[in-house]
Structures are given as C-alpha cells and as structure tokens.
Length: 598
Image 1: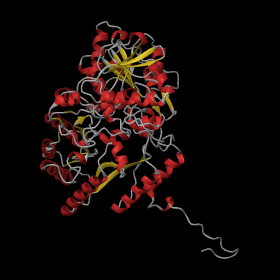
Image 2: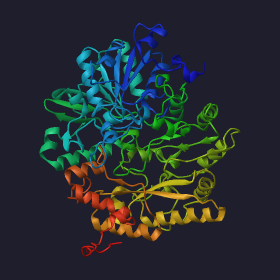
Image 3: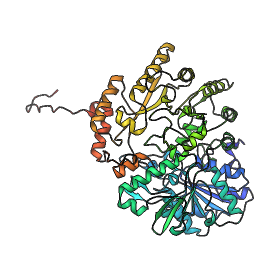
C-alpha cells in the first residue's frame, strides 16, 4: 500500500486511527480550520510533525463541525497535555469575505472548495467550545489568525476595535509567529508537571495576567479601553508594536484590558538554517489524508509540487501581514535540504517533471541578511528596502542563481518555475533603474530564461509617488525599467512570456484622481488587468490601523482613507476602464413608435 493511502503514515484523525496505534489517548490534539494536508505549507501539519519528532503522541482534528452536537470535539477525548487551536492557513474572516464584506462562495483549503466548513473567528469559536467541554485542559492558540490578533486590533468585518484574542477566546496561552520552538517548550514543560498558568517566560508567547502582576520592566502600551476612546492612542500603540516586532532583540509588551493585561513575550531569534531544515526535513507524506478519498483541495493543488526555500520578508509593505507573522529576518534552508526536497517531489507518482514554485514570501530574498548583524540588532526599520536599500543588506544573488541551476540539473526535473512574487528593488538601482551589480543581472537573466511558467508575478501596487512612499514600495519608474529589461530578454529569446503586475485600489492616501492617473499609466504601458485587489484592512498591518483611526502612526497626521463602498467601487473601476461595462453609456434616443430601431 503506498504511503499516501495508509492512514498510519499520517497523524491520527479518529478514534479508530488512535486505536490502530495502540494509544489510549493523545498527548496533544490539534484543531484546525483547514482540511488536513500533510505538507510543509500547511501549519497544522508542520506543528504536528515537529511535536511528533520530539516523541509526543499527536492527533489532529481538521475542520470540526461546531454546529451539531459537537461530536468532533468529543471523539478523541481530552489530550494528556493540551489542545492546540488554529483557524488555518488564513485568517477565517479573510477566508470568508471579500473586500466588500460579501460572503465568498468557495474555500480553497476545503475539499471541493466547499464554503462554510469553518466558522467566522474560528480560533475563538473552537477555543470556547473546548474550554466549555474540557475546562481543566489547557488550550494553546496559534496560526495566523491568533498571531495577528494577539493585541488590540481593528476588525474590518465587524467594523469594531477588538481586544486581543485571548480575552474573547479564553485560551490559556497564545503562540505567535512561526511556532515550532515555543510549542515544543510548552509541551515539555507541561509534561514536566508545570501548570499552564506558570508558563509566563516562554519566548514568542502571549498570556493574560492580573493587571497588577504584569512585569514592570516591559513596554506599557495604552489599554484597550484607551484605544477605544482615543484613536491617536490606538495609532501610537500600533507604531510601538510594529517597531518592536521588527527588532532583533524586542522588548516584552504589556497591554492592559479591564483588570487584566495581555503580556507578549519577545520572539525567538531568527531560526538558523539547521533549525529551519529540521522542520522541512520531517517525514511529510506531502498529500491530503486518505479520509478525503482523492477529492480535490484547491490550495493543495497549487503547492503539491512546490518548494519553500525560506521564511520571513524584509519588504515591510504597509498592507501586508507576512513580516508581522513570519518576521522581518530571513530564515533560509540549506541548499542540501532544498535538494533533498527536490528528490522527494521528483519521487511523487504524479510528478511530471515540473516544479511549480521555488519560492518564499518574496522568492528572491533567499539567503539574504545583514552584513554586520550588530547593526541589524539596533535597527527598528520596518523595511530593509525602503526608502532605499539598506547599505548593510547583502543583496548578492549568486547563491540563489547557483541553486536554481542545481535544481534544473536534477535528472527528473524538466522545468523549475518561480511562482512566488519577486522584489525587483533588490537588484535594480532606485536612481538609475539599472542593475545594482553583475550578480543581479545574472540572476534576472537566469530567472526570465529558465524559471517563468509563462507569467512572472511582481507587485508594483500603484504608480503615485506619495502612495508608493507610504506603502514602502519603490518608484514606478523602477517597475518600468524592470518591464523593459523583461521585455528585452523575451524579445531576444523569442519567449513570449507575460509580466503580471498586481495593483491595489483604495489604499490609505489614495483618492480617485490617483486611480485615474494609475489608469493612464497602465494604458500607456499596454496593460489590461484581469486580477486586481481592493484594499482589505487585515489585523496588525499599518494600513489597517490607518483605516480605522484615520491617522498615520508614524507622522501623527490625519490621512485620507476611502471608506465609502461607492467610492471603493469607483476606485476599483479605474482598473477596468478598457472594458465597455465600466464606461458611461450614452443614452440612445428612443425611436418613434413603429420605427425599426435596428
């Protein structure tokens, strides 16, 4: 029986699978809002495999039904140590709703893309159920929904300011960011007999404490109640939170709420290559659990033959959650680990020779870091690329180019694509638009000639200088220089490839005249866009804080924000001016009665 058809190759998901292993109970039970795919791109699978590798008995309950008699929450009983809860790979509200707050009709992380398999605010709903059924068993929150909602945050879908998710959920502990190290320490200390309430010193965790017991040495934020009453205080909180999250040696944060306080311990240092390898080298089957009987899970279809080479992003885009969750500093895998995964992908029965993505949050940040890390340790900049590339950042892409070539040299690999977006400001000069160094030109030529599947993704986002300065993106002239270089190689090599730029409407600072100017720029460049995005405020981003408060946390000044649904629709409409349905229609005169209007 092939490994992917044998339930024993996966973490157990049922009482029958527990019994098959001879377990009377699990040490840890993970609840997730996603279908169970045993692949290193799915967070619950990663945490489960990491804990399993430490010797713990781990079970997983994917997409439990929260609307019936709660049998999914009861079927495995209580774990010996703790429940782990995650909403899944996406915030459940982003997963469920469009930028216009309309309910989506599909869910890429569910079998057959079926919508409605997880609740709104899934991390909170799952936790509340577990605490009601098993009040004595600790619940540890993790995943992106909990991570980005760990402190007071604006929730776009309810249009309210919410307290940290620990308050509403009742969880005992929260792990933020990439959780392999803290979750293993939690398991070890609970197994050693410590109470959940005593785990107050674990890095990269947050917990609720009596207000008077919060550490006096910590950075004291404005309280939740103060943020409700004064938007300037909410904006000031955001700036301090973002600055601390971008530091190599962050401070403990304390945010009062009622008579308690949320305490956020500093994160772990950036994972070493060996630590990153250890997570990716675990024995994933790389396929969905057999319970799904070969049915389609769209998110899995996208990544089944992909390889993640690093985590983290130092771009610091004002609307993006990646650095807030994965961190600003890059955790890269070793070349050997990546090539081992190429071997595993090549051995998959359905592999036809094409790796769909050699990527990461920004594909060409692999292996990049500060030359002098003592300078990085003092830095609070949210972006290493804006307003200009940091002089301490080593942007040499030689190592990445060589790795691409080694992957292509694999006997079973025909093509290896870069499906993730890239940052062209890493290798282009912000003043001249030319390549910063020969290694950048070599990388770019290798990328365009051998690693584009027909379409290369980049994200200029806008063309207006004041908006680009705010969102921490390079000037539009650099995108035009990049496009010219891309077109030049395609013409010389007769490649017929497309450059696919992504743009966003209704960003803070953006007015209709800015969208009109962007539309003119796109027309000049010959673009007719099909895939664009209307800005969606997501928790713990600079632009979400601005959307709610109307204040730029870094200047203290009021900012124009498009909030009216009609205006947001008009701004988005400028992307599609080339389509007749978005142009004003001239009224045709009604023909006289009896006349053929043909």
